[in-house]
Image (tube, rainbow, N blue to C red):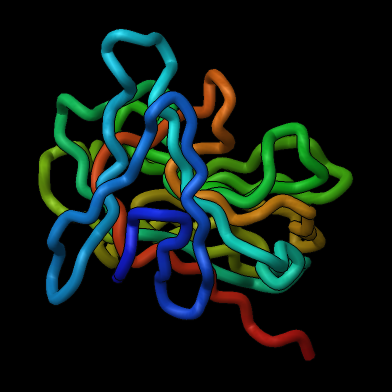
Length: 204
């Protein structure tokens, strides 16, 4: 649940989130359940690739690094057919060229989970076959198990991809919602987003 989307800070759970926008981009609050979700708008029609906006965590990126532990991440999304984009990044930490990455995306309206491990630039993708761009809310979750990456949609398994048991995910990037950055080609997510989470068990 989000309680603020204007000014500089939004708050979801116990993670502080900072709104970063360029070219007139902005997020808005939209009612969802007992609270509010964030609405990520389409780009400005008059300026190609303008109106880019993301929300990112602050201030300690290392706290959201799972390392080699099993963990999960996800969000509730609502997308219409008219909001479908070729690239649509919902939640991610790290870039493709970073030392490592985890990401939830809904490219072309279909959800998928991505993991890239430290020292292994191969992208392991659990890709759903069914689109979620029907104007309804869907809860999309990615789970990193000991040797598999699992995608679930509304509680049902939608895809599973084997991964190396030794795969480790750690980088210095913040957690970002709605896009990979604010530069041109940021794979801007367009639609409603609520209840983003990353769950990492305590290190033993």
